[in-house]
Length: 245
Figure 1 (cartoon, rainbow, N blue to C red):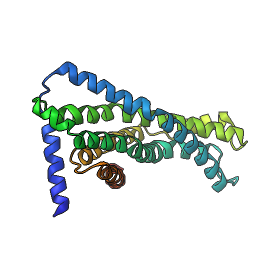
Figure 2 (cartoon, rainbow, N blue to C red; figure 1 turned 30 degrees about the horizontal axis):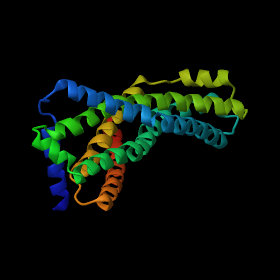
Figure 3 (cartoon, helix red, strand yellow; figure 1 turned 90 degrees about the vertical axis):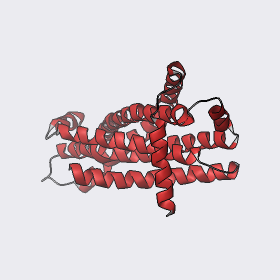
């Protein structure tokens, strides 16, 4: 019963979120602020994680495929498909759930406990639209961009790791990248990116918007938001893979 209560309030929040803005200029300013916070703020951790994901994938793949029967270019194909299909969309999204999701939940939770949301509602502002919608739209634009950057950096990191460790020559790696490439994999990765971006922004926003209590409850709401978002990302990952692959 508690699950249906939360799910119903979540759907009502999404419904109220798409009402017409009172002041388009004010909403545009908030939207641009969220794009900078979500995109630029999370870029350093995405770059670091992506480079090492690609490097580790190259080293471990080479360790498992050390045999004359398997061409070295297969390493590049595995790194490419692993980064595009799973590592960049899923792993990076889970990291962003902790970085971006906890920030959204704590920000809205702090506004709720300090009665800033109540003050905005008294002034006639639809707080669900003003506070939640820019975060969701900003995430839908910036997180797929971060995942695209992550996939490119992961492949490049794997290429550099293979060259530095004398596992695979860069020319052979580049040849493997072009072999058996399926453009549908990119479409599938972007579908996952947009789905995960919506979960990363809307679920923590719900937990933060409806928090009750003080600083302790804000911390609990942030933790619950991150855990719930990570679980939903993994469930959505399986559902999308079962439907689209």
